Length: 204
Image 1: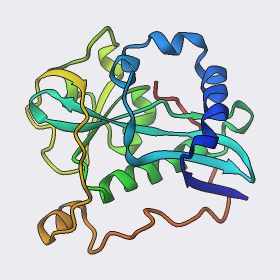
Image 2 (image 1 turned 90 degrees about the vertical axis):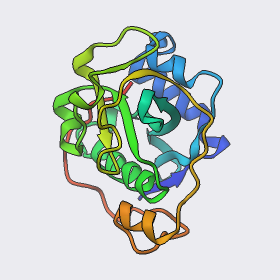
Image 3 (image 1 turned 45 degrees about the horizontal axis):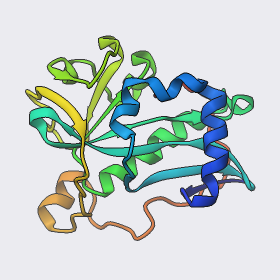
């Protein structure tokens, strides 16, 4: 049975093995890694997808500053065990991860990944066209998503790591903005069945 859990210390060794298998040792030299190095994932936004006790998927979100737009999240790496690709697990993780970010009151998410895949979740290249990463990236793969309308409007300047902590905002104004009337203690229900079949394209 599939289980969607907050990442725990015991998941980390299997996560590192999965990322090495998915991306190879060169993953540590990618520009996005400069934004993650020495940082903790954003509170409540590192997850483990398990089949029984085996880790088969991992997404993490990280605090960043998106230039003039201010606090935002960086998504990645996102990976699924190679033998489980094509089962829709990437889509499942994206949908649940983004829903959790919305529930926690975050305004925007950036990533570097394949546009044809991530556009289905609302990511757009035009939202990042005036933002600058701390190293080389393919512009067509540098994408943004507004969780709150207008969060990346006119965004420009350098993207950098941030230790900004965004608390869950339970006031009426912010809950209306994220489209919920209450924020559950557990961000998402457990997985009870295998999702529909869709491929995964990894965010790096």
